[in-house]
Length: 60
Image (cartoon, rainbow, N blue to C red; front, side, top):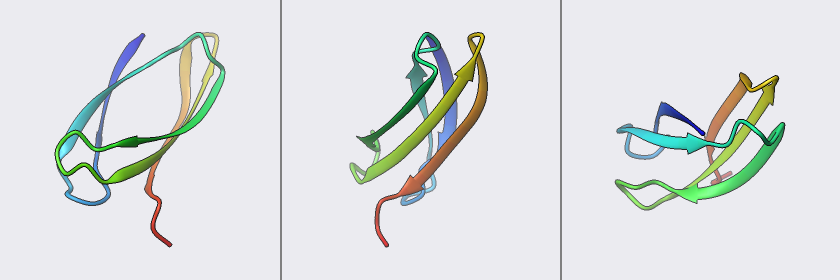
């Protein structure tokens, strides 16, 4: 597990998240720990190294 920081697309607060480096590609929705709005998270790892991290609101 690795800790990563990013900015919430709703409240703009910096929040941290633990990411599992053993799963090569993950895509899920998690609520912001500050404002509770849903955030779509897409992350990719290769050889336990972060390749991409995309954070976005789920509103269209």
